[in-house]
Length: 469
Image (cartoon, rainbow, N blue to C red; front, side):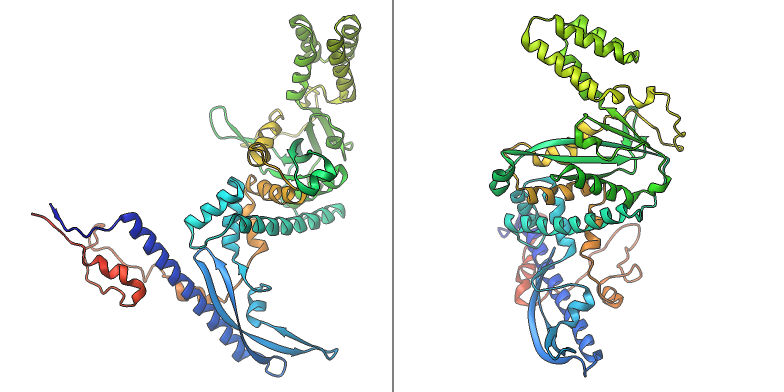
């Protein structure tokens, strides 16, 4: 094989085509927006809207920055004052200038949930036509998180008035709660100390089998925040009422480590269960020897709670080691405060409804895994520090991502609209798409390369030849 000296690196070629495609996309978007703006100008109420020229703005998209001009109009208000509006912005449902598309915002949010702000910025810059800094990634996270906060506050207010809009129906709802301590920085550190507990809650209506020994929680919702117990309870109820028809819920199983904030809001319809991991860990940590450990577990599993507490108290009075005595007294207090939750809900003889077909009511205890998956994996470790507001904003996106609701929520927040005809102008239907000749074979066809200077690199490809000797 004889190959000419002029060779082109495929990676370079791919990047150049990608760059030029993005440039063409931005030009197309510019034309569509300005065409729409002209239509609005022609159809406007001329008596109400007085044309005052054009102003430039830019929209940041996954293709890059598309700069365009739109008309500004003067409006005489009833109070005698004047205001200026952009009919294009109003028609699309956007405000301000220099804005970012919802699709790009969603891509940034997805990247931020997976890694640091700096890594997210690098990923977006490499995989799209838009270059952003880590500060821009942080700014987007704060803006989106603040919008989700408003939404959660509205949901909490609706739930408080028993006006939730959830459609899922279940007779039994499982709730699990836990906290995770995160390092703080700046003003938050001065206010709360070096670290502060972020509260996390999940709710689900059962589990489905997805493997031989693997199960997945069904219809899971989640929320996380640094706030107080009372406010967090309302937030959690708002998230639940947005997904579930709470009027149909007859029983709630609440699982947690026994912290006071976890029991906040528990009423007669709820059964609290002390998380088995924390319960068993407390016994292992406090028992002075193997025999004592076995005795405690035997009394626990036989439901002899009074005897268990008496045994722990007697053991604390008999040991000579002060540290051991302290651990046993802490265990006694811990179990006394959570006496009603020591026995798992499945062994209490509760009259629970049968689970729907394909669903199971399994033992609770998924919270430790969810704490890591939702929050810990992204926000803890690696010397990460957070402000309270910044941590809350990221946590809101993380809970949405890990319950499969991130893109749906963000689309609702940043949903810009255009007339359908503009989509038809840039979308190739199946009837217009190219067809193959024969059985999957595409023959060579001649065609002209673009002649504009911007596409010189494509014309140069025609000069690269390979000849078989």
